Image 1 (cartoon, helix red, strand yellow):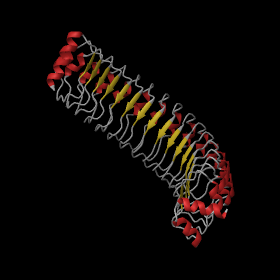
Image 2 (cartoon, helix red, strand yellow):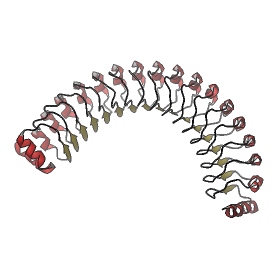
Image 3 (cartoon, rainbow, N blue to C red):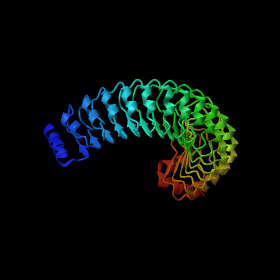
Image 4 (cartoon, rainbow, N blue to C red):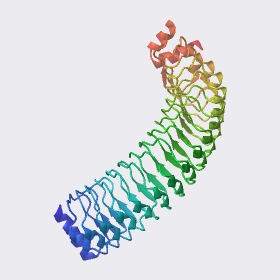
Amino acid sequence: MLDEAMQRIHEAKRTRQTELDLADLDLTQLPEEVCELTGLTNLNLMDNRLTGLPESIGNLTGLVELILFDNRLTALPESIGRLGALTKLDLGNNRLTALVEAVGDLATLEWLYLSGNDLEELPESLCNLVSLVEIDLRSNDLEALPEPIGNLASLAELNLRGNDLRSLPESIGDLARLEFLDLNANRLTSLPESIGALAALTNLDLNGNRITELPDSIGELRKLEELDVSYNRLEALPQSIGKLTAIKKLTARNNDLLSLPETLGNLVALTELDLWDCSIEALPDTIGNLTAITRLDLGFNRLSVLPDSIENLTALTELDLRFNRLSMLPDSIGNLTELETLDLEGNRLSALPDSIGGLTALTQLEVKRNQLSVLPASLSAIGGLKELLVEGNPFAPEVAAAVASGHDGLMAFLKEIS
């Protein structure tokens, strides 16, 4: 489609356009004529097959936005550093293995996208970009960050998901304006104490690393709203986690926590807590303080009892307790009147309390693979119960017959015996 590209270039030259769109034209090299359009402010070259850029790209000193997403670039020319007006540079989905030092000369750059390349390291000059607000480095091969990374004083979003980072430099704590930090799917075994200095941080994703312990300083992240530490090797959560009073979503699935700190009850803004598959043997009584929580996932743990304080979680709409070791439920479970789904599959329940009929908002109840011989008649009072999943229990013959008749038949049977 070179003809189409040349037609657009000539038209842009004739009419002195400031924007040129050459996206998706199957270009393998950039026509030199483009680099003569020194009045350009926006140049879109995404979805082509460019393997390189000419040195003359540096002539476009008025460029504010340069989009090179989804090409085949293996390197950048040093002249890229002459684009002194550039605020947005998108180099995502290319084949870059390194960045030229001249990138550090782009003093006005605010957005830099480098996801989906083959970068193994970053030049220290990158840390000169003090205007940078967002940098996307997802899906590269980075093993370390340059030590002066903390110089990026304007940085609000740093995405490092899917790299090979083993550690973080202490200077990361100097990113005073950082709000979003994604370290998902790296190889981190620990975090620096300086992480607690990220006073503006609202989102921290540490999912899929090898972290064995969180630093006490994590509790200093007073603006943190979402924290994901799933799929690590944590054996405990620090007591200081109770200082995260702004947190709304805490996800820690697939760790080896065994127990939870009492200070968890201080997280009064929490709406979602996911502790799936963490080997937890008991819940602290303070869990009853989490009165804003709407979703609680405790599946695949080792819980044998629930604390009475669970009755205080009156905002709960989803409660997952599947595959624990519960032999009974507290009568107070009936106070959870907003509960819509309750999963109790794979426990050791021999009976359900009559109070379960108080769960008037319930639409799905799963009690498969327990030790139930009967079901409470009070279940018939839950008018919106659409799914009652009970397979794999040693029911008495009359209950088993009702179960075999289907949902409507079972509900009719329960109403009849009530």
